[in-house]
Length: 459
Ligand code: UDP
Image (tube, rainbow, N blue to C red; front, top):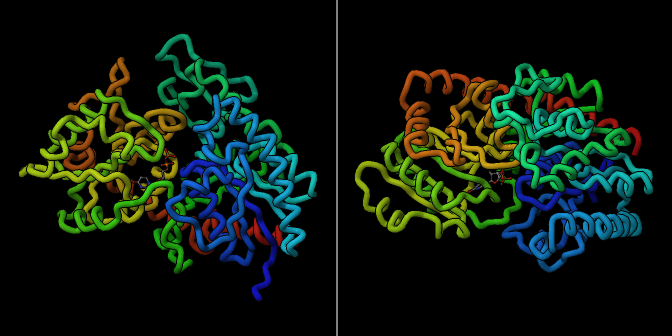
């Protein structure tokens, strides 16, 4: 029988982009002798295409076991019931694991679920908050929580100075929930991530020191921050965990063979990979502009269009790209993104700037064209272009649409022109730094070590 040094219960928020990094962090802990149990809500587990086999899986309840968020009347209703039923079922789970002779020592929770702190305190457990967004974005929500950052700004071109940032930012760089008054309740939840953060033992952030030095140093004066990322499978970084090649949990079924076979037939660095992640919805006009921008760029492209988005593609587009002679494209409903980004045929990543996608592009050294849609994506896009200089931004017009000419131009800038060379050099630099940070003795590796060794001491 394996003896474990400690037992961590992982409590993720039920979204693909939130579970992936927590699961990956779990693999690192596990490799250092910690037992892991991950406990998403039942409603989320029900819809999984695949479940992780590397860690134990249990379930709590969000109060909507049949349909999850979609079944709730509103976001507020979902959050309220999740807190009530989630707290109760989490307590039951901790009790059950104790009864089975497998007591929990520590809860690692997503701060979208701040009530987990109270439950952990009742049981006297170590508690770690795990932020799945960038430290810069966390810093912005911290200032909203403190009431210091009050938006919407009166002028669209007003610069915003945020403590911990090396440069001012514009309203178009701020997470959308901060700007749009109709997102008040969501913003409240995001600011609430900090409501009881002074009671936790650790604040873990899925980022790495070199990437966000200034802001990490600034927030580190307030909270016990440890950066532990990028949390992507080890075989794409330090290669120390040999069985760690994929996240192991997916809401959608990847079209792996179709995607990789197609890429295998494309020349080196010739393909634009396009994906808007698991949630973003483009409107029909934007889909048409994107489709035309891709075609007009004369580059080959692999475009992930989720099945719920497919009807928005221009008429005959799929047939046309199959027959095209100049540029060829492949549209898939979902792909194995890490394997795609690692493929030598990829020349640039046109991305919605979800934080996982950004960290994956950085870790695999793929230059980006950014097309942020909502939530934290505009802030991530700002950093890609101006701080890490690893891409260009395809700007929206005043109607909120990115026109085809802009898309075409941005792709060409990254893949063809002088500017592209600098971006490619930077991409190589960041790839190396990302790898080093997770490798033995790197800053994130040391932080994971420290977390484990303190856990073992108190367990
Ligand atoms: N992803 C994938 N296949 C796809 C598109 C995305 O495996 O076709 C993965 C991607 O690698 C990332 C996650 O889905 O890990 C998306 O997370 P992100 O934070 O980028 O965006 P979100 O879906 O949260 O908007």
